[in-house]
Amino acid sequence: MRQHSIAGARTGAGRAHPISVARPGATSDRATHAITVALQVGCLLVAGLLLGGCGRTELTQSDLTVREAWRNVEFCYAHRVAVAAAALRVASATADFDRPTLDFATEATNRAAHQPPNAAWSDDPQSFDRFKQAHGELTLALFRLLAEAQRHPGIAARSEILAARDELTSGLAQLEAARSRYSAAIAHYNRLIGRFPIRLWAGLLGFREREDFARLRDR
Image 1 (cartoon, rainbow, N blue to C red):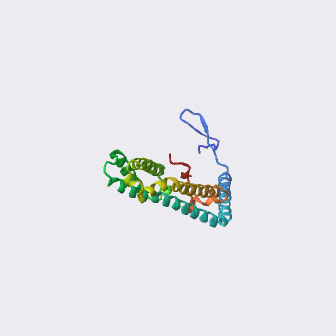
Image 2 (cartoon, rainbow, N blue to C red; image 1 turned 45 degrees about the horizontal axis):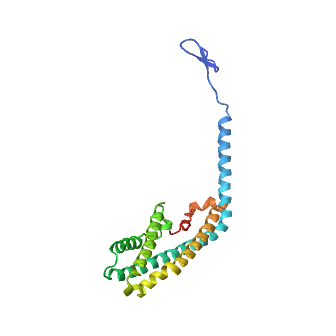
Image 3 (tube, helix red, strand yellow; image 1 turned 180 degrees about the vertical axis):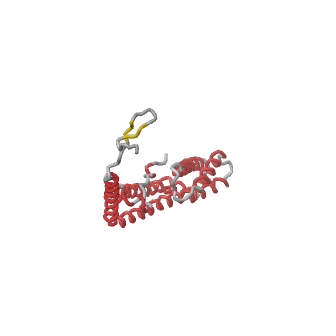
């Protein structure tokens, strides 16, 4: 009987090539190590979830605070749109009112009025940029509308025009205060999101870090 050596096998050229033989316990050692690592990771995750549970109520409350602060910002913008629309109706009914000013104000008012709600929660990073641009143009339109209204004594004292003037003074101050509250709420919320162990489970529950959209200011 031809004998075969476990150390090698003959090739057609007569050379012997070594045959690797796995050590009996090597596979078992690798499997044991993999299981150990998996258990350690699992324990860390479970510990994080258990420790983070105490922060879930705080994070949920912070999220509600952010949303309420944003609703106040939206309310200020919506009020500005309503005031602009009322002033625009008075201006449109006035003879010899500057047509380019009317057209610009009409377009700006319509654009701001048709912005989608909850722009701050959109996954589209450009959504809020469009929102801010639309309302920034509306502010400019109100300034131009009031400047032209001064040339028409018959409407300068109308309540709609006076309301528009007030919107560009006290209204701007109220909007700035609302945006500052929103900015503070966002900062607190984002600090919670980044805090260990909350960051381990926050994403699983739908919480994610949010951008401080209120950083932008009307020009």
